Image (cartoon, rainbow, N blue to C red; front, side, top):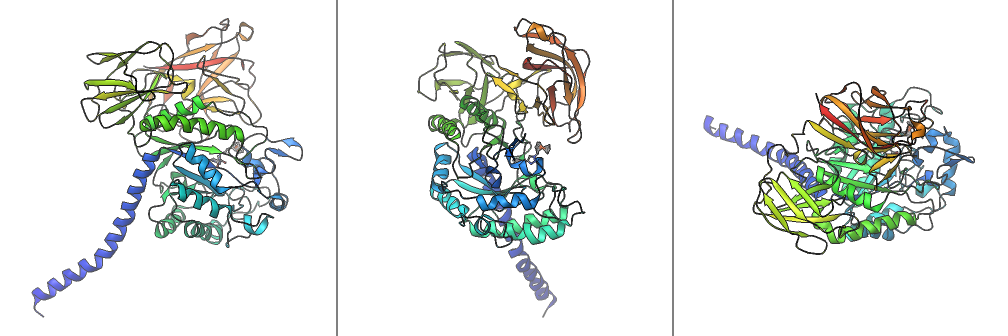
Length: 582
Ligand code: H79
């Protein structure tokens, strides 16, 4: 063979060897990218927390257990031997996969994520890897996930599993159960004997999975998480992984539970997991159902900021989704049936949000203004430079009169909102994508910015939000959980600020204290940044400048409003804090 032929042969062999490998890798990445696009378009999903914890339903041995229901084993320090006994009572005779899938469909939810195994370690599907599962350990003896995954597939609802990969309170080598298993963990043993085999079962027994939703990373090493990721992607390359797999190995980002970024967040695709009341797993006495108007506004808020909304229901041990939850979801579904065009498949807002009057989503040639708090008959919208051709309500098709002068648009609206929940105003523009005036672009926040109670996470099961006064109340501290407002800047707010506070209260609590804190980084206790005392306001809302400076760094996790431990000012009503950059 001549040298030339040898060279050609060598090159050919190199190409041939490289090709299949390259195309397989491209294929996996390509499938992930395509799945992410579909995930982004879907916007709204149903989360389901269902497990043995639905039996005690928030009460252990006659005593109420505070906090999220699926944590009862941990909070009440229930020994494995005792908690395991619950399986013998688990018999969800009312469960019908078709009804749950249909409810998701009716609610306008385009994917579903259900707990295959939560932190308690109990598999809610038929597992060969552990007999601690719904088929082998309960009188029910069937696999509800077979029925549910099929019912979702039939209706075109995406299907995925929640799987607690790091905490497992049933296993000596899983993380979290320190009351039964004080000895050191061998994560490898747990990973290889339970996690990897179970994840394989989930990927091979339930059709195409849209995603696997891991939670609370901590113990597994980067290499172990890589193994976990590879296990998933080898079996189903299009199955998405959330960021809570740990070590930055997810396909999309999760905010904290019930945490919505204060402004547009565009670093990557993200999703907010959220509760419909104050728990994930069913708790019999939690009737604090969120108002559908609020949830619809939150859906618009999240879509406007670039996220997905994964909204949870906690079915009972009998296998029924609480009726109150069903009613709320049906109401959202009715709104989406009319207004879905302004949610599904939209791009986020090119504008920043100066207040809580409107939110914004975009499609080619169209700007959707979601009027989540009715502005009254004269609505002025600033910052759009594209020529407006036409404006109308999405719900009833009625034309809306407007004037456009420079960067200001003035709309003439009815006195009251045409839609009781969220009226969508469609603004047709001459450009394919809106041109935005400098100073209004989402990533150039103004020097003065309001943080409304409405954009905060209400942290604590006693807190309440009132839409009429746009304020949160009932801040009294409770054992281990503090009732606080938490705002999540996600990097958007670094700087030093003067702070104003807008609130109302009765004169009788005048002089009592409150505090504003910053969670430095994302671990450890919040650092108290500012303290203040309330004046009596005769129940009217007032705005007061606070002494001191609030310093926010790029990695800080949240800003909080709450009361010191000894405080009496629980009756305060909080509308917003205003930050002015120094
Ligand atoms: O599955 C849901 C929660 O169970 C899970 N994530 C969502 C989607 C979650 N795991 N950990 N956390 C949430 C953080 C939990 C913190 C708390 Fe507690 C549990 C606060 C109150 C109960 C642990 C026990 C910390 C304080 C007491």
